Image (spheres, rainbow, N blue to C red):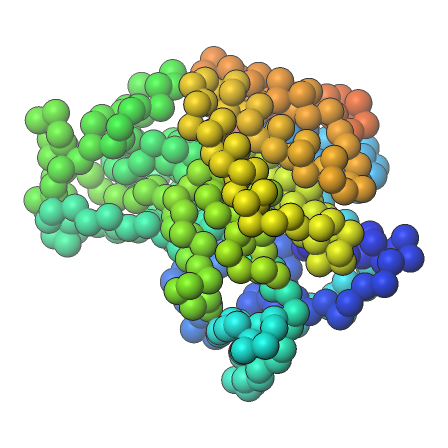
Length: 437
């Protein structure tokens, strides 16, 4: 959606835009933000893309992800809180492109099967329209891979887990914590998914939650029923055996063990191979495949910034495709990539981590006409957010911040997050207090 918006922005300025075709496997745009009750396979027996679940609220301030060219004020017409639920964020994302004509560029319910280099130039793209099961192969000069990297789960094995009598699922297949009420829950993982699913379970009545960490605990001030233990070693029935010798019985196991970059439609020689990192190697400016001209990747970085970073990337890719930005020689590209890699490897603090990505985005924006915004102010909000979570992991979503784009101060939500059990747009945007169910 960011890439389409980038081309539309150039067209509005009178630029000559080439034919743009977006292949979207889902029947609606929004990517990860399209909630579905389905797990595993969708209605066309394709892998489900979204990892969203009921009661998912933004886990970072909206002021850190706000579009520079489309504010929350413009969309909602009034201040809202800093941590909206997923339905409200999807509405915001959709609002920027709905009614713009960009749907004409999208082939919905169409999956890309293969992308192969054309023997002369460009690429041959084979796609399938899923409802009709009809395939077609077309030639394109440029290909932008914008599929994200939080859809294909990493699922490690644990000895004896096949004997566990209760539900075992990856976070990708988690759809709500209601079924965890009164249950003892083991969450394996120590990052954002583990943190949020654990406190969702607590919010909806789980008897206890144990987070099992591989390297370091998250270290929040958890309520008494939430604990962090070292990595689980094995299972025997419902009993888990941990690295420090402790044992405990559980009713459910959730693997919040991360995701893999996965590009089944690309041949081996074109695939981006990277872990979840702030600056993947072999991507010039973080977007252009170093060894394959005219192949681009969006959003492949580990993320502090999200929506506005994707925009900055999309605007530069647009300009590369439109020949507004000349991609330099191979040795210049390698020096630029290595400069960012060297800085990334020297990072020692959280502040340096966030500032690295802010400077990366600044570098992109300075090369295009995407609106510059106060990236340093966003860095400070991120650091406040980290502090808020350490102060109270259950109430940080009740904090309010000021928009970097409009200077509008967010307003408290009518219901504290821990009591807000209706995450619909209607309930969230209601001015009346919503009764606790």
